[in-house]
Image (cartoon, rainbow, N blue to C red):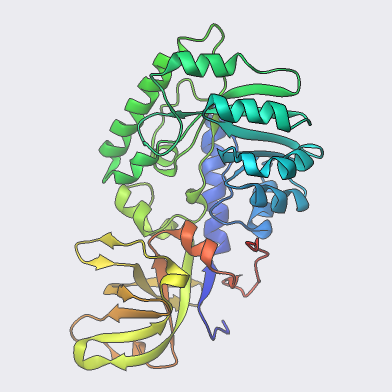
Length: 358
């Protein structure tokens, strides 16, 4: 690899395995597989999904929907609360492709119906315990009212839920406990409908480990495509399933305090961290001919804007941490790292086509 600045390296074989595994699970459970593309934001990776038959996707912004529309995706769910201020752009996109939007208030639905004239579908965002967005699942009267206000142009398409609080889990039992509670809330809500609604559900921990998806119609997870250090601590995956690593040059050495400095900081990794038990911003790896290998007790201990400080263990081998060498870091949160990094390539050196944020 010819690397001279921070670059996100994609292990294509691992990515394809992660995609195939989740697609096979959805098929086994008789669920629609609508992967969330917010993690990779790449037309190249999107093509790998298409090769196994994926035709429906989710995104987290209107601009992301436009990007994938330009790359021939025509069934897109914008899994983010409807932004009234973008109604004109949304209306233009709805003229060309099938679009679903997320609604969580009467005001939003009223605005959507009065301002977007091309055919569109809406899903009602339901809060099953995460506490970020959505109508609380216990507020069934409001949810039913919104569901019954669709018309021929603006059609109700179902409920959507995101159990994001599974990210607080530490182990399979924690994931299953949170997931089960979410399903119970959805079951109570669905019972209020005369006809059971379509239910879209997505969080990588639940979708990765649980086998119980009663009432669920659709998988809508995203992080699984790359996974990351956080997912290993949650219990969603093994460290061998992490499919991305940052490649960063070593630019300074401070062996006297068991540290080296890399070109790679918060603008490359974000400031998300984990405790294992040390606070760190990424797991260090050595690149090999076919991927990378974990370096035990070596981690990214501190970051600022462009700088990253790597902790080295006692009796470390200086020859592995020389100025000018490239070191690898498995990210704590691959979604943010991938979003921040414009320079991306596969292990074989293939550049990835990626969305450019405006």
